[in-house]
Image (cartoon, rainbow, N blue to C red):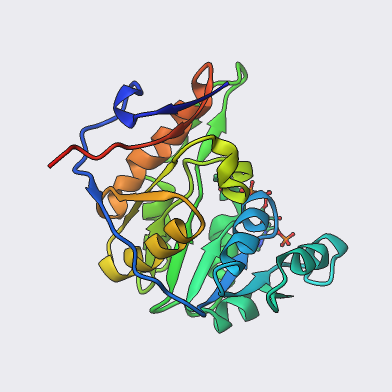
Length: 235
Ligand SMILES: NC(=O)c1ccc[n+]([C@@H]2O[C@H](COP(=O)([O-])OP(=O)(O)OC[C@H]3O[C@@H](n4cnc5c(N)ncnc54)[C@H](OP(=O)(O)O)[C@@H]3O)[C@@H](O)[C@H]2O)c1
């Protein structure tokens, strides 16, 4: 069963200053999607439909499933080794598993001035199946610390990859909450989010990733599957 839930109905969340943001259209960006699994394979084809140039960064760019993803993505998408993909791009989607994120990120070379889209969740599942936020701060803050000259924007971590690939499957509007320190980077990522059919809300600077990542944990531990939809307070 799917339920569109206000974040304010979900237990254990915090009071956060929430700002709804508009979108500014960005066309023809080169986007490196590092990792060709669930998230990379969902977002890459969607961003390509907006007219962006998608380069998958894969450890094995010639692998059959990676080439199948390139073909599925179309729009002149390509695949190459992760560092080569990142070097070509202004926006880098870090879609590796969290356990691999630091090694993968630090293998990408100089990321100064690039926008890093971070969908990661640092989740530990205990023996009873309960999910826990497994870092002291957040994956978003740790990634920003690893690449201080890049502009990290937390986004998409609260959403299942299947819904990223097919927003209509949610059965109604879905909000993607984002966080990051650079307003221009957040505006660019907001354009991508709204472009592929989701609403966006700016939760604040990168430290708000702690809230966003705990939202994912709460979603995973709930008895029902739900998506987040934030309804703005009437002005
Ligand atoms: N799955 C979801 O529904 C979902 C939703 C929201 C957020 N997230 C988060 O998004 C992140 C990615 O999850 P996922 O489900 O997409 O993972 P996944 O399906 O396991 O894909 C991860 C990809 O990372 C690449 N990779 C692995 N090691 C690498 C390395 N050392 N350097 C470069 N690339 C490497 C691999 O691609 P190659 O083999 O081609 O290199 C692999 O396909 C996680 O932090 C997860 O918590 C997941």
